[in-house]
Length: 64
Image (cartoon, rainbow, N blue to C red; front, side, top):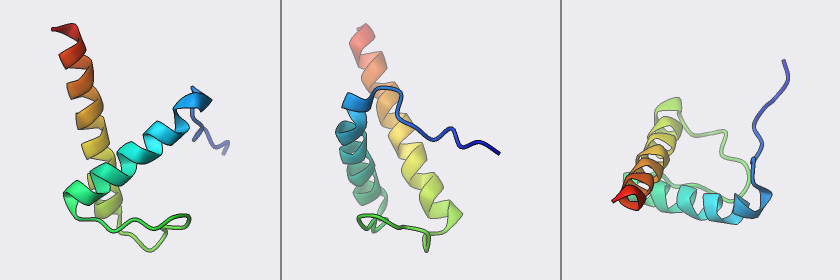
């Protein structure tokens, strides 16, 4: 199975990493630099869900 986990806009990679760290802090998940395979699916999902929530909110704010 091919991995499709790539950043579509390479210039946005640092911004996405900052968003991930900020989201993890907000939901109380301790992310380390590099490998985070010891996190549960629930912890990873809460970070990703919070990131999506923030991106949608940012887009909606831009529409106003």
